[in-house]
Image (cartoon, rainbow, N blue to C red; front, side):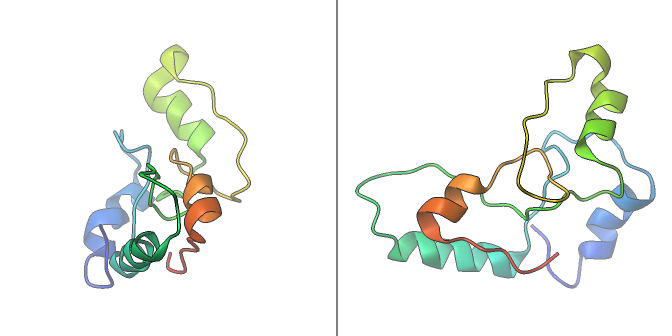
Length: 106
């Protein structure tokens, strides 16, 4: 989780020289997370729903396809199409659809 005081320390290294990432170069801003929690609490969903809450963009200057090929080689999973211009490896489409989640910080 990122906030204005730690973006450079935590994401700066990925931007300068990407390294392997178990979270597929995804991140979340603390204020966007707070917005998502409020939206989930106010949602009228009829039961429990599991959604990913993340920023829509990748924490790298390189694309997800480039990074997965570099760090996973032939074992890299196929990359599904995304409506996001610079997607990371987590889809927030369900959170957008069910909660109206619209992250604003990058």
